[in-house]
Each structure stands twice: as C-alpha cells, then as structure tokens.
Image (cartoon, rainbow, N blue to C red; front, side):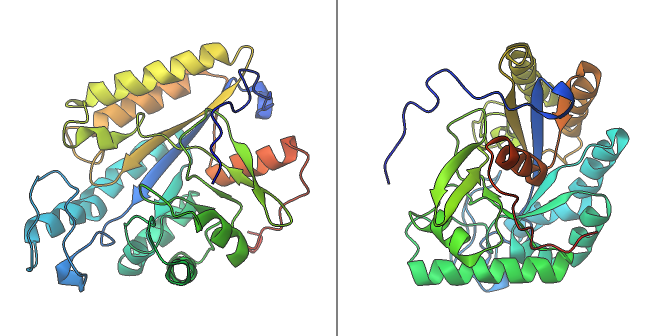
Length: 305
C-alpha cells in the first residue's frame, strides 16, 4: 500500500461545515466491555492491555474481567449523563461481542440518539489476519451488532492496526459509509474504492482518555481536559480561515471513573461555551464530506427513522 506523506500540501479544502462552524468535533465512545480477550469467555488468552500491568496465563483473570465490567456497570451511565446535559451526540464505537453480551446498552444508546459504529467483533488487531477469516469477522460483527442494537453500523474502526485488506473488505461487504483506520490528518479524505471513493475519518490517540493508562501522561481529570481544550482552541483559531475536524476518544471503563469524569465535563462545557463548533456523529460528518466532494448520495442501508 503506497504511503502519502504530502496530503493536501498545506492547502486543505474548505469543509463548509454546517452553519459556518469553525470546527467539527466527533466524540467517539469506545464500547469494548466483554470483547477483550478473556479465558473466562472461552478465548485463547487473557487481555494484557489494561490498568494492571500483569497478564494471567492459562486461567481466568477476575481482576481483568471485573476491571472491564466497570465500564458497562458504572462508567456508561456517568458518560451518558454528561452528554445528555448538552444534548451532544457521539459515535459509539462498539465491539460486536460487547453488545451481544449487553444488548441493553446498545438499545439505550440508540434511544439517546447516538450512532452505533463497529469496532470489530472482539477487541483485537486485524494486522496479520488471513483474508477469509477477516471477511468472516467483519460479517459476523455487522450481523451481531445489528441484532443487538436494531440498527446496522455504517462506520468502522479497527483496534490498533488494520490489515492491508480491511478497507477493501469493508467496501466489498457493502454497507459501510466510512472507516476511521487512519491517524494522519485533521480533515476527512477520500480513499480509492472499487467503483468510486470511500470516506476516511481520521482518528486520534492524543486527544484520547487512553492516555490515563500505562505512562500515557494523563494522571488527573484536568490533564485530559487541558490537553483536549488546547486542541479545540488551536483548531478553532485555524478555523477562521481553514476549518478542521477533531476526534476525541473515550472509553467507558476509563473516563467513566469518578476521578476522571470531571475531565469530560470540562471538555463538554468548553465546547458548549465556545460556539461555532459542530458536534456531530461520524456518519453525519462522512455524509457531509461526500456531498462536499461532489460524490453521489450514499445508499444508506439503514431504514429511515
């Protein structure tokens, strides 16, 4: 796969965000609880990426299991309360197995007006997957998310690295409006696709609560808020001439902790007070970008509300 180090060469297209917004912000709430590798759920090993630096080998790990369970049992409700305060809508980046185990969460998020996206079946990398296996994983993830949520996901994001086949398989399987398997820009862009073009919405690991874990640099709620609000302010200033997009990543079991949730509140309050910001679901941003790039209307596979 050819790499592009130039992009738009310092001359980004004007996105013409709705109502003349100087910045589009996408909040991505990752739902991974129960999709992490877990011997207790029949997986080949236990997940090693969480706040305790220890992997239990060959046996169930109740420390890891209950750590992830905190996200759906407690963190989810705090996060939803904060978004409801301002009426902001997010993309729920959902692993299919997480929603299969907690279908109530999927239905509740849909009822609140949030987008349901696909974060694969398990919380795992796709790098190195055999093509046939990856195709099966994508199809299973879509099928199980739709069964749990009642809506089909149209956005995709792979944990960590995708495979060289992932984007093509998303297009061939059909029904995907966009993916977020890129970290290389402050605006959406188009990737070549069979029969046309595919929208890519870059994601970010810096404006992300994952940095509360394992030396990521965030220790207190204000660390998260300070960093994210600095990014918002900088892009808002640039937006007077060249509006951009910002993704802010959240996790139920991370920002949903009582010692961290104030950081999210501070960011949401800052966005609400700033003005001239479009807080949007990722599917809305991707549809807007298609129209801005003069692509034909996307055939949405989801039924009309």
